[in-house]
Image 1 (cartoon, rainbow, N blue to C red):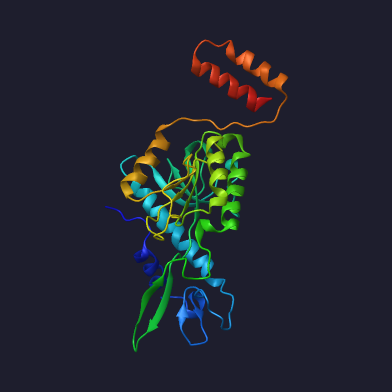
Image 2: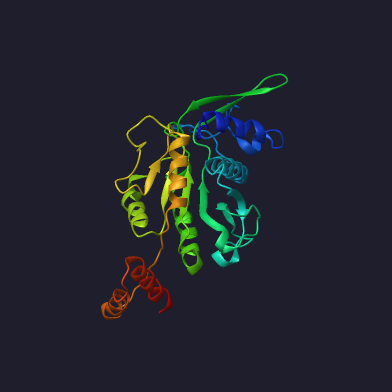
Amino acid sequence: MEKPWNRDAERKFFLKSMEFATPEQLFYLTDSQEYLAYWPKGYKGKKSTLQSRNSLIGKFTEKWVTDLIQKTVKGNKLFAVQGAICNELGLTSRAPADVVISRSNEITQRAEDVLIIIEVKMSVVWNWRLIKHKVSCSLKCIGDYKSHQGTPGLLRSDSMLKAIGKGANIRATWKASTIPFIIIGNTPITSYYYDKVDHLKKIGFIQGFWSINPDPISTPENIKSTAGKGFYRFDKFKELKTQVNNLLSEKRNFFSGMISKEELGKIIEIAGKKTAYKDKAEEFLKLIGGR
């Protein structure tokens, strides 16, 4: 069975990164000469700013998610592609998709081949101490995110807002109206965003903020889902695979607008003249999109 994000995945990130990065690029150095992933709660010594780790964990988690998603569509003749570009969908070389599920395995995609767009918002969750030995080193997990001063993953407002902004860029393109957009993280979200993510899911703007870390912390704030499932935590690979394939099997359309009630009424009346429900929907979407 495939494993969701856990301590072993973070340990692998650090050990793999230390093959080419220095400890100073991955850890904070305390006054007592300890290398730590985050400043512990209550630490009052001299602090420095660590930016170099962000790009490293970003690339690692995007690849990790790509590999995981590829396994969810195994046997479907589909591909999980990291860093996909599709100008028709607003995914440029400067702002590519973190991951897409597509009929094509090429970096440069056609809009009609892209089936799901995924934004990855993951980071180091637990605190770690690097222990140096004579000819090697090891890592010790010294606490969850409540034990350190960092704010990881989807608990950060800037991560949430950037993900929503990416969704706005995608939803601004009509060709993306049938493509689900999801955000994958490895933490819960703050209660401030519960209603917001449920509303975004309800209106079809996003299809979910998903966490693939079952046990980042053992407190009530490690919620399984919000009331409207705008946020949802996946505890098992099978659960994730089922939901991904449900999205692939459903045919939905995103539509939005701010028009007068009179104009909206005209659109409804015209669409209502069609006989079949599907024809009514297609006419409505055509009129909304082409007004």
